[in-house]
Amino acid sequence: MDEPIPVTRDVDHGTAKLMPDVDRKRAWLLTVDGAPQSYVDLDAPTHLEFEYARRLGHVVDTVAEPGRPLDVLHLGGGALTLPRYVAATRPGSRQDVVEADRGLLSLVVEQLPVPDDAAIALHGADARTWVEAAAPDSVDIVIADVFGGSRVPAHLTSVAYARAAERVLRADGVYLANLADAAPFAFLRSQLATFATVFEELALIAEPGVRRGRRFGNAVLVASHRPLDTATLARRTASDAFPARVEHGAVLREFIGDAKPVRDEDAVPSPEPPDGAFSIG
Image (cartoon, helix red, strand yellow):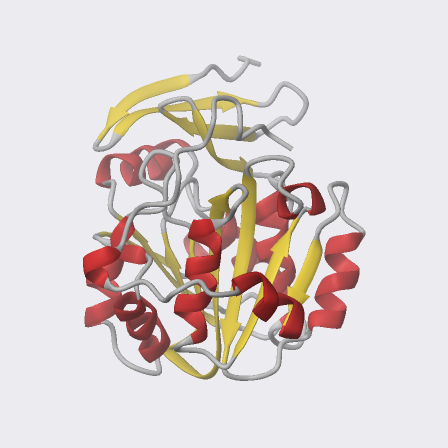
């Protein structure tokens, strides 16, 4: 049987590369301009290789009773890791994926096809433009994992964007975002302040080493109008191979401090990560 070989292709926003995992028969790593974007095992869609993806998965698992179908809007497609996970863990879910890089979408569909019965609709569009035009009260979860290169685009960081995302969610819906920062956390604190102006409940999931300022890394923001199951989330994230902590309430308010919500006219992308900051784990 032929061994899988890497696939390299110029896409709209850089050079994408799909590399087979030598240890897993039908698993692939997607990079864009050398930065790891997604990991997918076609035979095991519930396998979440990246730390931040596992944390997003934990939240998805705890927002509703196990197996209940959900309507999910994914902003940022990558290799469709989370849409595949939701389709496998919550059959019958309806999912929309919005990805600005149409070339990347074409590559993923061609090389890593999604099962026909997965009910995942793919859209080549800008995330904010899509959200602002989407029907109100139409989804249970919004998952934002949008990076231009290795930075969250500025227009997805403001109060106006947060309000647009909140409008799309149902009353008990949950917004999730994969963010990245390092001490002194000007970007992360501003994002928490921004979403605190729109949502009543916030939580932050991050590895202790990142929160203590020891290294640059990912943090998952969780926002909703209803209390979050932070106890279950804390147990699950603490038992991962790379344990994380869940912060909320007074601790999170103290972390936000005097950070100001972001207006469109002041919005900036997330900081440029240092070389080697994003490793695969």
